[in-house]
Image (cartoon, rainbow, N blue to C red; front, top):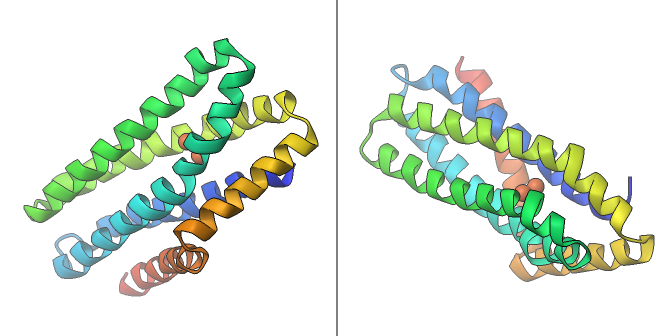
Amino acid sequence: MNKTVKLLYEEHETIINAIDAAGMAKSLIGKDDQAYEHMIRTLLVFFRQYADKYHHYKEEEVLFPEMCKRNELIAEGIVREMLENHEDFRKKIAQIERSLNEKNFSRTQSLLIEYTEALLDHIAVENDEVFQVAESLFTEIELDKMYYQFIDIDVAIGGGKKDELKELVDTLRKNILMAE
Ligand SMILES: [Fe+2]
Ligand SMILES: [Fe+2]
């Protein structure tokens, strides 16, 4: 795997860990609502910042535009679909937050599961199709150039904060396991 694709793939792995934590949070409802609310707020921060700002931003600002320049069919097909998914994810996160603010935890959890299932499907399409198309469209040098653009994006948003968000998810998962 080329290092550019690997970076995105590894970000997907971190997002999948957060999705796992989202599923585990259900056990807290009715048992420790305050802990549930806190956990979901933390996950919302993760999904908004890590999944959207650090990760989707790289795809939207660097990878997808380059793919579209190469091939119009890709622009109108798979890339458009991926961009629509990103938009839907943003709306869904806002919906989850509203439901959490209303302290409707069972609805919050079912919206969260709808979101994470759609996100898992999205990640599978990118891993299995989009990244492979990208590796076939670009030379190693072109891919390397994108890698450095990705690193620039991380530095611009804050590289240290990205690691903190990743650790936050690991801590959340441990906390849920301990509470069970
Ligand atoms: Fe994406
Ligand atoms: Fe992605």
